[in-house]
Amino acid sequence: MQADLQSHLGQIGPQTLALIDPEQITRAWQQALFSPPSPKHHLLTAVNEGQVVGLAAIAPAPKMLVQPKQSPLAEKNADAEIVALEVCDWENNLGDASRLVNAIGDMLRMSGASRVQIWLAAEAPEKIRFFSECGFAPAGLRQGLKVGHESMVQHLWFTDL
Image 1 (cartoon, rainbow, N blue to C red):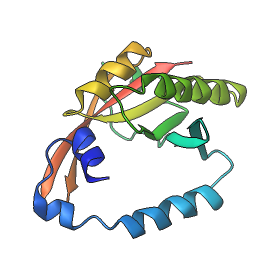
Image 2 (cartoon, rainbow, N blue to C red):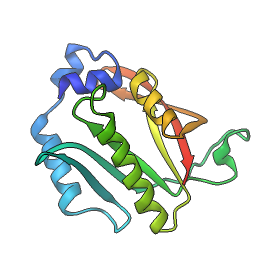
Image 3 (cartoon, rainbow, N blue to C red):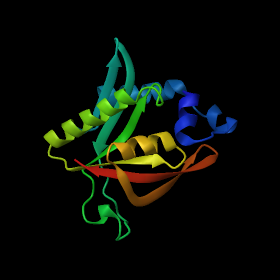
Image 4 (cartoon, rainbow, N blue to C red):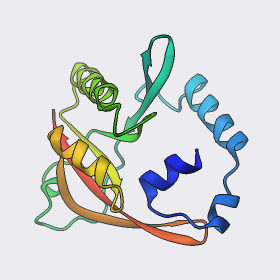
């Protein structure tokens, strides 16, 4: 899990890694899986040869209170947000990641959604490249997050369905 976090969030120091509690993360995911907060929250899995090799979680997109006027989201907010999309091995498992993105698009279109967004870590070039190739584009918004004792920057990406 630590290697996966480092690959997506950038270099994480030992103090921050020590704060990660795998059991707490497991409990949170079990809660999300078995008791989603609303009917618009979904968890999808990618299975290969009987093994779960990826997952995606989607939720209603929060309404953005502040947006630059030049942002594509200034005219129309996203209907949904991909809050997680992970596969076991990003470099060698892009097919499963693509299938998850396609399943998300199908599910959201059937529900009437027309735009989806995702926050991507600035230091995750493999994810940025992947979502760009899936048709996502930067929305011109960023946020700073405190992760343990360290800070990270995320950029908002979106696509129309």
